[in-house]
Image 1 (cartoon, chains in turn cyan, orange):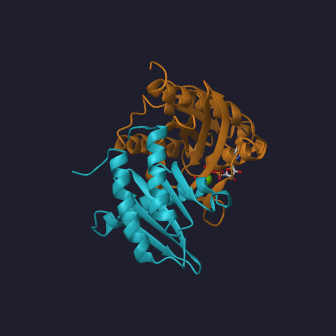
Image 2 (cartoon, each protein chain N blue to C red):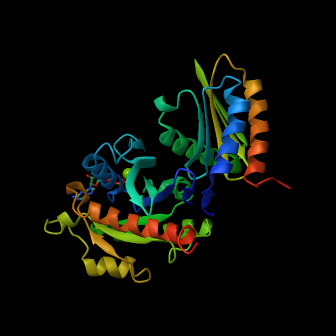
Image 3 (tube, rainbow over the protein chains, first blue to last red):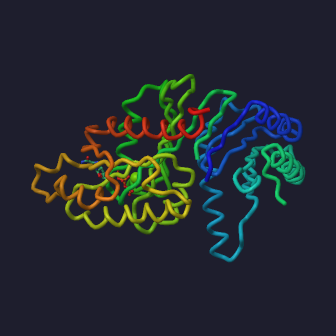
Length: 134
Length: 204
Ligand SMILES: Nc1nc2c(ncn2[C@@H]2O[C@H](COP(=O)(O)OP(=O)(O)OP(=O)(O)O)[C@@H](O)[C@H]2O)c(=O)[nH]1
Ligand SMILES: [Mg+2]
């Protein structure tokens, strides 16, 4: 696995897409993380109240564990995960094969909208990072 | 897989404490956590089963100050040492930049130490990492038991078992008492940051 070098323009563009597509649609928090559990970019209103380091580490581990479970039952991968809470829900989606987009949102935002927007953001992020699938 | 953020001037590295079950990996992190001030340490996260055994991992984020104008952020992880958690150990190793192999000085753990080192090599290979290339140091833990009636391994025996091929630095430790804990941390941090920086920042 190669190291990741982030530059200001890449980060800024990523953040703008996340803000426009997801934060403006009403989600609380969005984290872009890598498979090792590093936070690459974060956006949203509850960032200071949230332990993003722990969330990123757990999300990466959770995703990795689920991918192994998928293999055990003969699936390639689960490309997205969704956990529903009483008030807030969390959605994990793969971006390229290295990144995971974590979205936290309340019951005022529909899962359908989140899915749609996450898929769009994932595509643009893949472009920004040059990891477009061929 | 280190993360180098040129816009915030931060380097993030992942250091994993590896070793057999009950060798003292979590104890190292707890000691570091308790000894460090709030400014340098983040929240410690542990996922354990009943009775203190690590189920998935422990995580302790540290802020080690500046090197060449870059903020150094280190994430210390431990793996679950028990043999059955092989799949989880492999997951925790994902993106590792430096490793502390903690060996247990108890004589009854001699085989477990060797098995765990083999397991580490195998798991690194799965990520196309070479144990001879990535920063690795050894910690011979529980040296406080050497003068007790419990049979322990000598340093020579540990060296023979674990450090023949690696030829790396080792530290004697008694993690419960904090002996050797910071020496180990300092050395692995130094090597890991140097390793990452050499790849990306120097020579440019
Ligand atoms: N005497 C002595 N006991 C130690 C030392 N370090 C750890 N222990 C004890 O060994 C036991 C296991 O320590 P842990 O740190 O939980 O071991 P671990 O490597 O995290 O174990 P797993 O999570 O199962 O992989 C605990 O009861 C510790 O108190 C040491 O230096 N000396
Ligand atoms: Mg443990």
